[in-house]
Length: 388
Image (cartoon, rainbow, N blue to C red; front, top):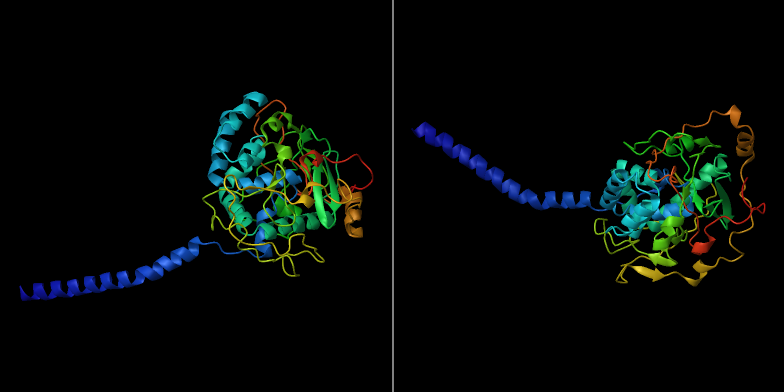
């Protein structure tokens, strides 16, 4: 009996010591969890990774995706709804989407089922993109422009029958040729940039849709998406534009702050901008000129809707709808562009669109710089200013 009591006492002492250590370690464990759960600002290569799949989309579609990515659960819900209602007529789909309790950016993406599906399939990437945009909007806008510079210098980003590519100062703009029809480019981001950007782990790249019209580095679905039906609700394609100067995207000519409560540092939009593209380094193209510099940080505010009037300069750009300067490219890129047959075309993999509406065979896009009013989202008449 004495031996039993001795062993029991020893066991009790061990258990008491373990319990004491556990209590003492709780604050440290909590701190570690909090650190893991917080937002860690991304460097240029990390941001390049996030924006690569969408950087070559038309400008307005980029604005929609960035805002919608701050609502990953809504994106999932909208994608499930889109697949379930793929056979409905376009007008009926638009009417139903308008009544859904989703952010306007998510509603806007219902016009582009393939883009919505891509975001839902890659939900972890979508969430990371949303957190990056919310916390580092200036850095994200610069990352999109840096990716476009890389694609343009490689000879892949050029005007096509589906979209036109322009300069507005140092910024590269992408707009649909036809203001009523939008084409979304299909490309494999991990191949198009030629190793400049590392693949996002686990990112799903769907096969290209049937009838893909292969271009120079980019592919387009044979039929574009008519956006007229979605314009009646205020959240359609022409309502959105990116802010290349680093603030929140523009929605109906106003700065639009996401109201998502799931993003890190909710209520402190832009609080982690680091200016990582404002100096040379890994992930920054040579001689890159960032458009977003010194973005003001701080709490958002402005209830309800976080919708603030855009700066006066954003409504009407100096020098006309688009600056009259062609996109320059390197001689090597020009040679590759002139002889595409000598260079194997990269495989195009993007989410296959849902057979939603008869007129929706591709995912739409939109183009307008933050400085462009909604009516100026379509590309102007050909004047030799675009990069051909």
